[in-house]
Length: 430
Image (cartoon, rainbow, N blue to C red; front, side, top):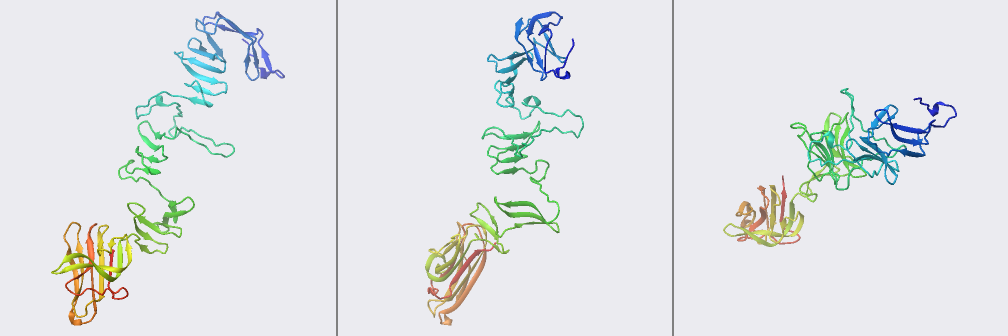
């Protein structure tokens, strides 16, 4: 057989076969009885024909079709147009099931009869095992190079106009899993949270589990190269508010680079426990404390020391962070466990020639009241001016009660709203 390539002849754009037909032969060399008439082959390699005559397209014997030295057996494979003529299908390989389809838009479907893009591959596998095998994949890409440094690369090239590359997966409720053949390594949950080295679905944007790679290994290992450089920056969408920085001298520093305070809280943002303001001052904005002045009237009876020991109420409550002091009962209730400091002072008494006193009474939650401290001014002073002070540092549990009180068997403090020097301070020391 002589082969003539049209593009090798100057001025020729197409060739019509001399016999004007293509004949099909059986494996024994005899004619199959089928041929296609009116053959034309142009320089683009497109074959056109006027008609098909002879036997039907499915032959009873094996027929081999040679294309540039390659051949397939028609009893195993079939290439045909669909009934509507708008798609080319390939089926066979021991089954009549369609394997590949090229539709009128040029879309190629593998195991898919209605391809929706240029290459549409479908897989039908329940993937019930957590061990992912080659047969589980809809598409398998592998570098066959035996060099140990070779890599298998899947590359997305950006649009020529400079746009972005997008990797899109599933519906809004779908998780994205990255795994090797044995283990899941990373997951993007349907809510956008990224989990690394664990399979649990957390609610944080980034969830990393420590100790998975090796015992004692960090969940996140971040290092900064050089000195005075930011290792981690924290902030809102517009500015960087806080940093973990490696400074000159290999010091690790945590702070802000804006005119904002550094706040610490527990059990919710409403419970701020510590604050470092922009001037470097350390405060505890939610630290329980109360400051009162000017005795007004009796509160609750909190103890008995031969006489009723009565808590004080005040004209002025200047500070009451957390509202833990009740100015109706005169009792301060400790909100958290810790060391509480109480300081009490009374300079004026109501009766000039009578003894006067100041008590600190402590009542543990569920327990009995006890006297922590008391101090007295004698009647011999014979004056309303009778300074008395008392203070105490008490280790308390949440729910314990502290109060400033006086002995009702003797003179009460002066109840002046403008003078009298009666004051009480309680605060959580640490």
